[in-house]
Length: 295
Length: 128
Image (cartoon, rainbow over the protein chains, first blue to last red):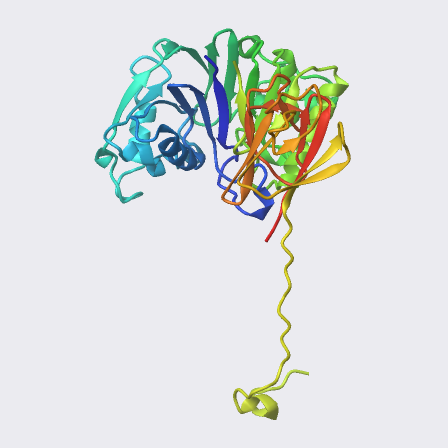
């Protein structure tokens, strides 16, 4: 059974629509992983709205069952949920996963954003069945996928997920300030060309991934003024992908100030860095509407 | 020097007045979407994309035929929706690479590079 990854929103922090972002897109984080009929949704940024519309078209009236895995509940990762049309259909069912046994934090915050102070429709008025679920001790099997999670470096807690199926592996690891967890945090400033070293558990989590979707919000020039904001410089993400021997790297969570041309340049620099160090990883900028066959 | 309120230009103080202007309609020439074959049999050549769906492959039944053994008979489809073309790999043997990345489908933008084996095409957006 083939499985696929599709990008519905790749922008970081806040939607950035307009002519300057047509290629990579202006919608915030939303990635679909599917192997018919299994449907997994990573984050519900504004890209989720379009995924919902597409699901309605694709499923042609058939009931939709989906599994939501939210990296965290910052606005740009949950804002699309109230506009996810399939949530309003009583034939549909969605599970919202916490990262540990009994963890309902994400489910509760997701429903909280639909209080009447914020949105005209209450969560309780959604007609689909939406229920909390969890990854137990950080690992679960969901419709043929083996899913694990690990905590990332981001203000207010954030999680990466790994998805394995039929010998293939995809990592979704957005909102992660890699530069703050380096073995030597001063090294990038002192020796920018030298490969950076990461905590071994993180490298092992990502080891051998066929696709790593990672936070590469900033260029080396942009990062120094954004230290502590919870996001990585793309060059550090490249080093992580090489350390973990990932086959492909999708640089994700593009800064809202970056135009398509800026992202192109950021990706060129990433590719140059990988090539300079003999890395075989295929680096590309995650962009809306791009779908990869994984297995 | 700017006129003060009590020194208004007599030509504009009296409100609107008729003027005669020759208006030439703005001529916007529509440009069709296209695929430029840069490398491969028959290159260089430009294919205009005029239909909602265009099939490219080795077969004579394909809308765009490129006679390369590296292409499957029906290698890829280009489908237009909301003014954009999306490329779909039709299960080809050698795959579809967009700017160096093997893809299943993707919305195309100006200058995107499609590689099918050693055949290289560049997508150009139309307007109008």
